[in-house]
Image (cartoon, rainbow, N blue to C red; front, side, top):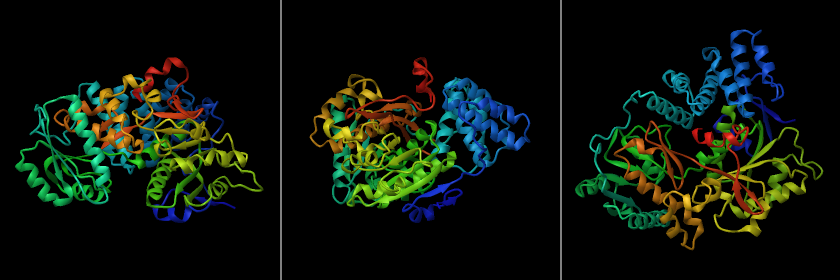
Length: 509
């Protein structure tokens, strides 16, 4: 018998990621078939206030999954959110604000985002999402946004003096050199009047770096890259110079004034995968993540987001990349007698590098699970033409930066952000470093935009659509693709597209 779980405790993940575990999320009404949300709404009319609120929330979710945005919006609008539990109030706020923004209803977005004032327990990325939507609504209604990370010394200024502080030796030196080189190349291509100076961060303490930056009369510092150093900075009250760190600290929030954080977060990708799978209508997931610190962090991010939405984790497996893929697949899919048992599994989340990932779908086919949907992060995509090898990944859905999947992201290379830099940097032979090159380009563009925060609201970058959140962290939304004949092709926005007429509206989500 599988063990029943309620909620998620991070301390137990290590034990749970070796065997199958079924969960039943609390506070979720018994679900009727998705095609009949009207029956739920009828039931709500006869129920007590607390139960009726939960039932209407479920109906609104079903309408949204079916692409019936207006009906979903109406159902969510009729919910007495005060009758919901704290967790369900957050679910309601995220759903209602998403629908309201898509339907251009800023007043309703402000109603939904009032949960921010109540300081309900929520994940950091949930808070950032609600803050982003609240800011959009205030701007749409011409209401001023409360001051958060104002930079009066840069207001109205053109940023043309930037110091880049990255390590030239040590474990991160190769990554740092790739990012710095891309910045230099992009700077040369743009031809703008920016003085770009470099400091070897491995030779100085943080305080010494800031002393040098101030002596050079810099307006913005890019760096540090090391996660521990960023964590140290975000615990300060302020930093001496406006700073764009190229990583995220370990804290739940960044409290340092003048400090901004940007990076390529695998945890963010896992959370986006969880939201995508939920919006596609899945409720019971299996997980496969590598048995290392990276796999644990990303697995926890997916696990937390999935449970926050009300989903079940049926099986979670931490695999050894050196062992046969079949070992992990058999555990993840409850293989009995050479056949997968999928009664309580309707999708798989996969975190894997290309060589390992390519073996997973054929192994699933062997165990009679060819149609089980797979959601993956960018890490299984090498980003170069590997049509023959990537045939084994056909139908796998994954996200990646626009520069890696231009056809799926924007409809072709010619309309990519910073196309000239894309063309030049794409000629580099090491495709594995291309995402870091794109990161360097976006870091340069973000740094030169810190005098005008409005430029960072939905900024179309080479690494995704960028949003500046309330605590100075920059969040990326990535486009989705799936492999078809070994090539990434576009797929629709999850849970919203009911017909081709809705395609344009998807950009508002």
